[in-house]
Image 1 (cartoon, helix red, strand yellow):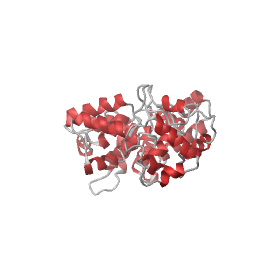
Image 2 (tube, rainbow, N blue to C red):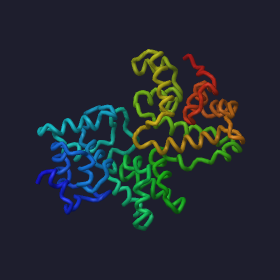
Image 3 (cartoon, rainbow, N blue to C red):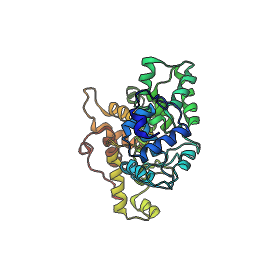
Image 4 (tube, rainbow, N blue to C red):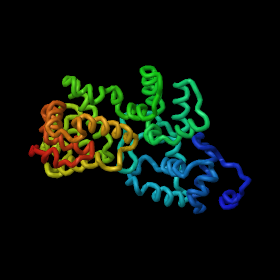
Length: 338
């Protein structure tokens, strides 16, 4: 039966339902439809899934050896599927938890990631001991946090989900996604407490900044900034030290660190880390703002020095300003020439 006849047949039942696990038969139907040149919206209707779910499944057919810019991935796989000799089954059988395009591997055990929204829903329901239906299920499936949660392996989802539920008696999707990306992020004191207890401020701000930096989509840029701030272990490194390690010039290191800091404020984020970045942004913004809601520049410099000893405060302040989306001029120019 051709894809056209299936799509036009009003009485044909969809192949699946939103969140259902993909089957080999459905994958075959999907590839056949793409090769026939069917529109993705038509394919989605035939499968009983959303267009986004169709796109996500297609991207999982990209071999792990390929490094393709995120904006080019869909076009790449659509073109390759037109070749009957292209092996799309192996990538599905061996999903990679690593990079897609300019993203990078998330920190997680080397096990298969949760491959379907339905799996995340199933884990949530088992942890909570109840099933969602109707509007509550629709609200769950519409949550933006699911885009992050599906990037993590099932054992990571279980570990952090059960712990959050045991501590709080409920499992909120935003907290769940943030905790999977950056363990401990949901346990930090609120901004009011941090201002009162200075001893806790440094470690908490460092965790928040680390969460924001971890969201930088380019792996190389992210590594440079992490080394610059001392987030990768071994203390902060100078431009010369990082350059020697990576085999690039000091000026190139500076450019990559600046680009990484600026990307924190952009719309793009590393796969699986958007929710964690949003939480870090909200917490840092509240912390550095005065009672009237205006930026407290002196406090920014103070917490920069407290949270990142050994790093010039101006450099940290620049990163903090990008986290909250404020003008970096308010914190002064980055002052580290090393």
